[in-house]
Length: 335
Image 1 (tube, rainbow, N blue to C red):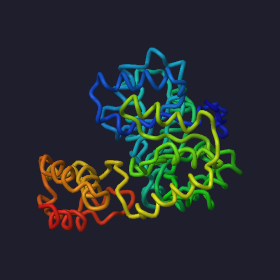
Image 2: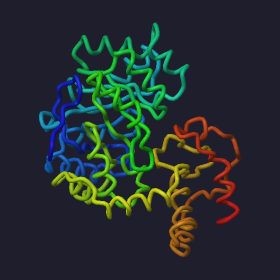
Image 3: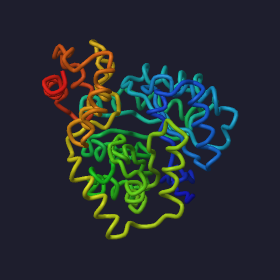
């Protein structure tokens, strides 16, 4: 698999990395199988986060003994110096490593958060001190607000930037990624499959890898996902006109206002599995899976009708989706 230089870090990373967000759905045993297959298949970049529940613990449990085989990236949503310092130490302990190659300020969503993280007593101070102490090697930033990320990298404090980019969301190609390249900042692509919504995995990844990015990190929680994802990079080849038309048709069907299954909206105080509910409804209403969709919905422990309209989920959603409105709609259609 092709390796690309991750900007000013100088790290030569495989163009497809391991996105560990969905691994929190795996059992400890299943996680080990997936992680070992990723490394055995040549993947050398692993990206996780403190927010991904037990993902860091699973990495530490299963592949800390193979630490020399991969570059390790994680991230924290803490905005204060004290909070970030605590998370860095927790990450080191859980992943059973003496150092982390890339530690990122995670999901910078609002200007106030950005200013707090970057200002006196903010997260950046803790990251710089950890870097000087040898706990981390490089500092990055992630988020879903492209304009805020542009502002972030203009500070010249970050070695990498991580943002959503896929056939549905090509906006980073306009300004963010070109600027990052000009500044020798590594470009990490999250949500390359639209949170799993883009069904043609290989075409979606080939589209991304043909762009000027460094590494795409599709989420993987099954060994088959690794095989399918790597098929897009072996060999690297641009889409044909016919393949482009197929992908464009899927993009048109999806639209832009859809759930990426990031899970940031969770947990719901009423026990609603919001991402699962949205996916099931999509299958039921758009993909013709009436019977299967209804059965899956019926099996959910809490239905959309359980929503009390508190709105906490909407404050967490990085895509500002109208979650309460959608749950109300689903309740009307499916019960």
